[in-house]
Image 1 (cartoon, rainbow over the protein chains, first blue to last red):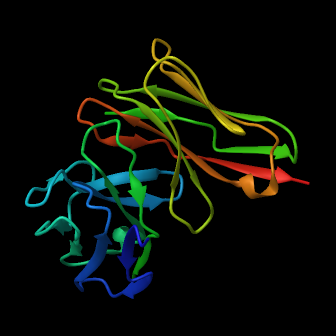
Image 2 (image 1 turned 60 degrees about the vertical axis):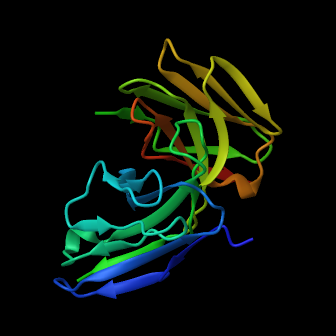
Length: 114
Length: 109
């Protein structure tokens, strides 16, 4: 089974350009999440969606936006990339947004903004 | 905000036991997760604790004390493939996960 996939695997982006990181899951999970992972800081939640049609943000939303038009897809868009957005981005999903549900992670997208 | 602390690095010998501690201060508590992450890969689920006590899963065990804001992950009979980063994550009042920075475990022959 595919589980959760992300694209692209890696990308080098010029500052000021826009980019959309794609995330798709086939587990029919209601909740989806975007994290960034930086050395020494651990995973930080950027945006989440409890169910299709709803979104929210938590820790580091500035410069990022998301949409959740359907259950399976949860794209993350950088409108105008800056070097501080250089990171590894992980998408995750869980059956519900309840605290006891395990989150399953995609393979990640390594983004470098120059 | 949420505060989750775990050691940065640990080294152990193949066949030995290693204990990774995690302390947390969060707004509410709805459970604690441990994830394993090999270099360049995605985090994968290891264990979940919501009640005090020890949960055992093969070579891995996880312990929780809610009153002390403390958990540990115990890795027994260490194997080379256990070399990875281990992430402690707490689900708090808003049901979102807050992660510690991770503990890198190196297993030596």
